[in-house]
Structure formats: structure tokens, C-alpha cells
Length: 229
Image (cartoon, rainbow, N blue to C red):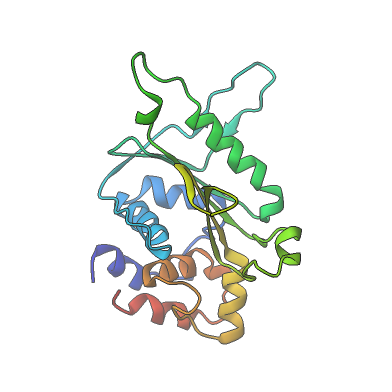
């Protein structure tokens, strides 16, 4: 087991704050061991088989500059920058995707749309990745009505693509929506935590710790976190 696995296995859930509260979430992942944030991000990417492995990052100012006097001030929960210049925006929300789509896309646009340095090519601009934890469905009404959409997803990974052949149009935008409510529902109904809910073991561990206040049987979280990745 690595250091993060060891930490997860030793958690005292009677003392752990509710990590769905943005203050607690931010405190753990920005004020604690940087390995925790790196582990969480790598688990999210691995869960969708994205070949991106983070080894180091820098936590940045979470405030997004206002573009005009009338503009809203945006404050992210976590803003990090990778060694290659990629920006990752992370937000914890206690509501669903319906209220979140415009907000996350707007945050992405404000970061990605920052002024380039003189002589810098648009092609050289690193991507911006947005990750949003939601406590409500990540399925829109259109998704529910569409028979081709997979229902009950816990983790949705979105990009801009061609509507006819579904090829990726650009890697500049990458959006991740994680439905904590759907995960808790699956765990409580099955009274177990398995990789059936997600594709990657470490992601399952982190999501169980983040949502532990709503999981009825704490013993199954402890068992999952003691298992070697």
C-alpha cells in the first residue's frame, strides 16, 4: 500500500468532517498532504481510462478575476496547475447538474479565455479541466427521455465532439461530473462497495470517503479502504 492508501485505511470516521462541505473539502485537499489531491485527481482520470498521470501540481488562487464591474465574482473550491500548464478547476456542490452546467462551463471559459502572452500561438494554450462533485442527478431531462443515454451514471466525462461522427473536436475542454448521490444510493442498496459502481478501485475508495456521512454501514467503507489497490 502507498502512503495515501495507508492514510485511507486509518481514517476514524467518528472524527472525519463531512467532505461534501466545501470548506472541509478544500481544507483536506489544499492544506493537507499534496499527495491526497494528486491521488484524487489521478483516480478520477483513471476511472475513465484517461492516460494522464499527475506527479506534481501547484495549488493556485481560487478567485477568478471579474471581466467587468458588473460581472459576478467566481470563487472555485480548488484551482490547480500541472507542470505542463494544464489548469484543473474543482468544485463541490450540493445540487445537481441542471443548476451546474452553465456555472462550470462559465468557469472553464473564464480560465481558458485568459489573454495569451505576446507571440504565443493559440495551439500552444494548455487545456482547462473542470471537475464538479454534485449531490444530485447528472442526468438532464433530455437525457432521461433519450433511450440512447446510459442512465444512473456516477461519473460523466464530457468533451466537445463532432455531432455526426462523434470524433473529439478539441482537447481544450474536459468536464467531469461526479454524482455523489447516485454512488451513495448504489452502496446503500447493495450494502457493499465494489468496482461495479466505478471502473477504478482508487476512485471508489475516494468517493466512499467523501460521501461517508450518507453511507449507512461504515464497516464496508473501512473494508474497501483496507483493500490494496
